[in-house]
Image (cartoon, rainbow, N blue to C red):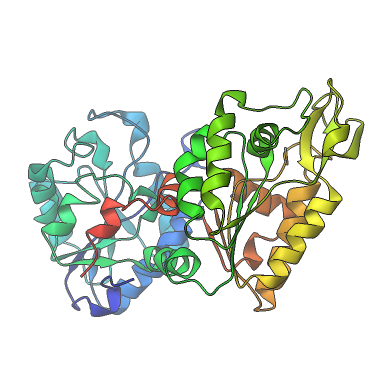
Length: 394
């Protein structure tokens, strides 16, 4: 990926840094500081350059109005605690008061500006608002990959007004995704799960041109199985997408081997520790639901992983939130993690359910890279250009 990195940025200047501080809150306090921690590497790198660090971020959806409950002020204390130094808070992200506050900062100090979405022009990518933001700094750093699929004033327009660089978290994300789909070591295996084919059509169509093998699981596998004439009983499936599923299988021929479940875990009801059994595809009863992949399917997936050099994973293989239907996802995740830890597999995963499933399996830390970017990760996997990333390219 040919983008500008922080090491190339000037020393001793004012850095405007777009971060993702859209953090979970409970009773007005930050309940999960993962996204704050993700920004620390960039802040520290800029402090080593003796820069003033001015943070731009959005929170929630105030729709261009000042909504007190959506202020970023509650982020200040936990961020300062993580940094071990004070963080100044500025009540706006543009204007003279912001300029004065930044001017008063010593080198290496950090200021957090108020919610960019308090301005209507943020989400419309207004050039006037971007110019007002740009007037506050000497160069721009985007460290919010999770917001890079949106062309907003603080993610896209501003990057054309100042010298623009990728932050350390953005850099990690882009390098990992380039290793997974841009210039991967082959063979490349993809695992795509989740409930619906309809929400992942662009993804599936793009991946069959990029992968050597594609394993399909979750509820969407039921649609493919139904399209192939398999008995799926009372399983969740989009029967109206059968023609589309067959088109994807046909388009993959000669390019990418599609792996569908060969055996499944079924039950008559979806509840924790429900009575379940493993059966072949032609043994699913009319009142049974397919809720996970079976042992033979997992074994075949394990074999595919052993022969792959790169794995890209989005979506669980079964209803992982409800045991015993978590086994397929957990066992496959543990295998992938072990191969990645041993240096035999570049394993990149992303998407909300995927991250939750890997955490459940206790292996997220052993994957080569786990993206928490959600929509941006999915759009990247679909082959779509991300405005916030395109603006960082040389």
